[in-house]
Length: 561
Image (cartoon, rainbow, N blue to C red):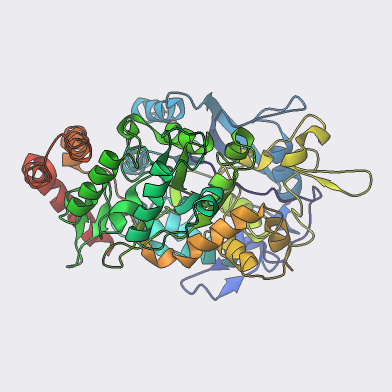
């Protein structure tokens, strides 16, 4: 589960006139026609920031376990659908909804596709690139990039331009066939959390190099930092049941110290893409993990642990170091102080390897997309909706979405003007409800780099002046400091370079190759196979389909360079 810790914002429920809520451009993005200038820009009469007569957007929607309702509402009729109608003159019609268990949303979309059912006006989807590709190839959806250029506001365009590569998975014959759903940049990039009280107790300093890290780890294992008279602590919480390079309690940064990054496609010195897990830089990192396993620095069961399970030793007070995202300060690290009164932790930068190298995985700033039906009557309506959210929700001002999406849902106001948010859920009638999750793109609108850069600025001492800064300044200090570390080390990111649909050979041989990779690398880490086995594995990987996959991945890369 990937958690995103966000502070809620606010809405004024009245429909307000917003100059420039929809900005248009032809071939020149600086040549704009504002909504108030001409109704002929729209598919229906439009005045004062909304359609004169409501227009309809039809869609489908996954009901996730985190989606909550109150006041007798449901996804078809709630505070969000009322806002869209009152503020924008848009009625949202759901053809169907389904619980997102066992990939039911994906399954039902595929059933619609294979049975030839009429598709809704828009489909928003996070997940399988294969399904999105199949929807695109069905021929039922329009060139979304062309519409984006015409209808998207300046704010929306600038957000998308922060990383133009987000379009890459959806480009077909030079056309952008789906609009990426943007996420927060750096949101899952890792930092190192260390038991600060253990460092103090053992008179140690936080490590900045591999040698210093090993000094700390040795002390955490052998000098009884929890003072219970037993040798029952481990130095580093890692879990690689799923992958070596994962989202919490991960070990990708260990490989980064040697210039490697497993489980993803990296850019090679010659500019081509190469699969990280079979590169020679992996070998010294695997040897190092083997050494740490033998010395008891990491748990003997690490290969059986998924991410939450691996984190349990840290939150139980039995591990001294864990690596993961900045938001771990909100979950699960607070469990440490509940389980071990007086325990202290602190976020630190990732250390450098023997040659000064550092590396960490990055966070994709898009994990899904919106497809627009070629038969949609009011194609501009999606942009009227999304422009408003980018212009006012993504970076709220002091009059719109100040405390959250809707009073009585994700915030409330007390009798003396105090603001109740998620932490005071018991003071909000019916409890705290994250109503922005009802929105067509699941999170309203996100400007990728805004949140983490703002948190870093606040950590550097900037006084919050904008409404957005004031909202973020309310976060716990440890989270703000961890975000600054993420930004300070942003130059060490090793991004996943292949974002296309799984290739033909990946589909045919991928599961077998993944199984082979896990088996061999785990055996090396556990000392059940010599390091020389890596070379045999790398060769076997290439001869068992890896060579064809490499050619296919690079053929895709050539099309989007």
